[in-house]
Length: 509
Image: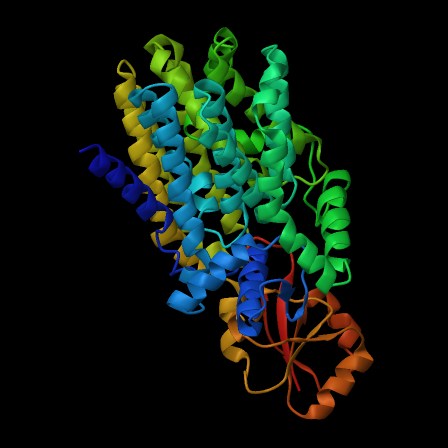
């Protein structure tokens, strides 16, 4: 009976995470580069060197590429394959959180944690993406939970699971998967005045295990690329991302905390109560560890100059348990005003979206879809009606949030997707002709064209490229002025990229 219950919970989560991953095109820049890189590695039979557009890609380690390559072999190269294992790891992460909360706390808190995670549209969205974050989130979560089970039960298998998780985390996204969990554990033991536990953690053997999993690939890619990959990844995509704002993704110190608040809606409206409850329960080691992890991880990316909403998603599982722990203890008069705040917020969102989209000349046609977000408002109203019963409050927020996620992925996003520049421009490209790009282009074209797009960096190179006869050239509107003297080139179609500033352009001669 217990197995069937757990299977049902996992299956429900999986259905939510996998919802319509096949029906929305690859239009996100990160998704496009990751999915294309995996396809190129599979095409070459190369498990070591990542490339995008057949040139070295130094952004990310390879674990997510491997899972995508496996999915491509099983299901073919398509959107479903690129995202399948992300969705699967999402369901694993939710179940890992549920089972940990049940073991350390009780079944009620475990169910609440499960509900809180699945109610987060941002969390569900993250596991719809063909990016490395789903794997990082899973393995960081596994590392923190494994350590605590070792700390509590002193069973060796958990400390080895901790080191295994660190190893695969490093293969997912780099040293962040090692440094932040390790620092969290050190601060936890320091505050508990139990640094002697470090001696029980089999650090030497454990690190050998961690590095046996992660280091061989780093050495191999270093050797095969004359260490260019290592230098680029370490200095540009780690140190520079922390010390400088990259690709326009900056912001004030508090924006990372705002990302967490918005990302964990609707249940983040209870963060003030949670903060108070966590402080009261700070001598409970499980609460202390989870709170330290959430705080350190969020603070780290607040200090970082490059700020993105996905950076702090690894704290969501731990945060869901802290919120569940709080909700189990709350009395109705202590959360009523949080529900009022949520009602005001969700009543505003549809109007904000509507007028924002109405003012966008590329997305104004989908402005009416903003009213679907009133589903969240109905959940807020229902929760207020039943505010005296916490289980009904949680149920109202959960049902409305899950319904919103399903509507978002099956109704809203497909409509938005029709306006993506890649989907609009692709039918105008003659795939049998040579294809080049001038300076920059939307990387999603590489995923769909499945061929090298020749880089052209000057008008002279464009002229030389055109000597082949009829050609396609992709570029951005900002570069058209530089090509105006090439009279043979004609603008065929323009379309602004979704959720990005550039406008993609197709030129032909």
